[in-house]
Length: 142
Image (cartoon, rainbow, N blue to C red; front, side, top):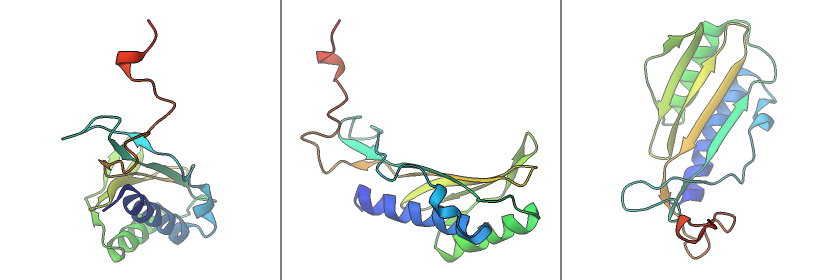
């Protein structure tokens, strides 16, 4: 899987959950060109990348329990593994993951739903100039 394929699959999951809960919400997903250096086994921040995505429903959901069930069903239909929901600070979280990435759907008490996910950390196909704006520590000015 390439970073672009992982990004596309992860973005599809975020978009489809948002659309399932509140039509018109997929436009709220952040910058589609965001690539994050990630390092990891067999690489470093200059040779591996991932993408981070966040989106919010266009309008609050009326029934968080129903919304959680719909989000779970949609993610499962798309082939993602959905973990048991958990709760913290009054918000409920629905973690999900798969071969392309992982994330969570957060249901706040006021009906706001946020979906955030990261694609998996993969080899950067553009290793010659992966992040021109990043200065390697060894050549950074003192």
